[in-house]
Image (cartoon, rainbow, N blue to C red; front, side):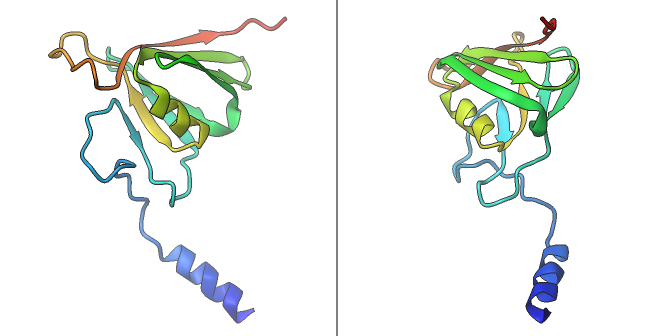
Length: 134
């Protein structure tokens, strides 16, 4: 019993999660993820180029589909059902991070900003659609 209480005591004294990028190098990616050694976040946030933000709980995700390296679709089980489509380039790492529930936020590219290198991951568009029940 003393071991269990000590374990809970150690858990309660832990600091806030470290939200540093997954890799140790500084990267220019349009998302923030947490390291695999930390508990996954309960929700992820979509940041649109017009300043709007929407958050969705990971527990509502029913299916993740990556049609190619440039399109990720997240289907939620919430009411109403929602289909989130993320379009861009070089998004295979983001797909893996979503599958492991490690994404804190993703952000649309601001078209007014300077052009990004073709080799960098880019999110050109995030679309949220309500799916009609059959």
